[in-house]
Image (cartoon, rainbow, N blue to C red; front, side, top):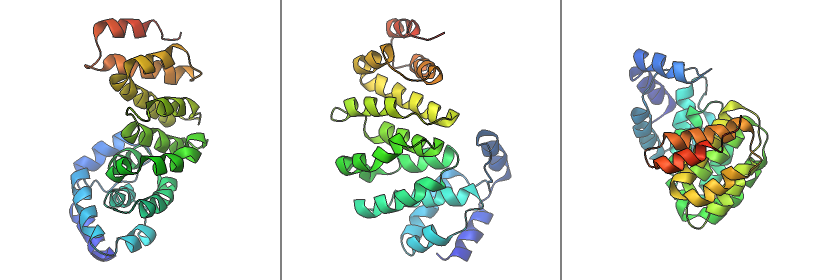
Length: 226
């Protein structure tokens, strides 16, 4: 598909109701209102030919185009190429939507954890809000396992960028860690240098989970900061 065909397709599949709803959830986004399943299917078609040109040169006036570029990354089969384009994609992230769904689709990462872990280290230390959110989301999606849990928890503590969307991502990631590794995560929550908002939000998200027992929820409640 060439750019004109893609533009026509997106215009034809724009939905005003979806646009208004998504705009209410994504501050500052300029949306056409194309639904995520449609964008995912379109990304699969674009990937069949000339996807690099689209990624590098297609306009990004609309959030839908940025999201589409993110979903393209999920089809890459070579880890070196994936990391090359992921490095180009992360600076495009300016809201939670173009961060979370595209990054969670990068299933190739599970086969190349060591290489990707090295890749995300600069983003863990980065002070820019969405660079840090990208790191937290990648940790949450691909490194909460037996091999990486200790490194993952330490990394989440080290993500210090300012901003609500960084804080929410770290809290969300910690809640995922707790469900899978409750003892290790609770030990972190009992003694950490997280900011108060992130600390309390992580506990809140854990206590909201149906996968956490009543006794654990009460115990965690006592760890909240005033």
